[in-house]
Image (cartoon, rainbow, N blue to C red):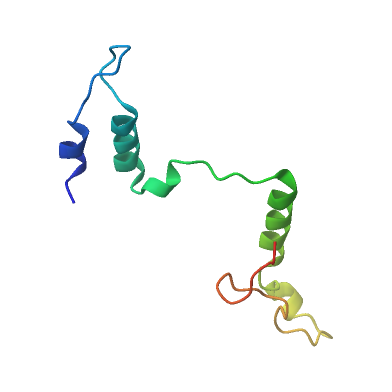
Length: 90
């Protein structure tokens, strides 16, 4: 795989004459970001984004102050979810 500098030197003239093609712009963004998948936006509806945000907030351990309270039997979050093992079924 060629380095970013050598790939960016491939300029082709566009009809409007600015000297850059979409391919060249994509290569510039690829070199700046580091991977090609980040160039395209991810499209989520607000409903899905809200569900993902709630799941992200719920997925945390219980606080230590709650664990060390006098009369509590709860030692860990039983509903903790791992992104690889358990999916949200969206």
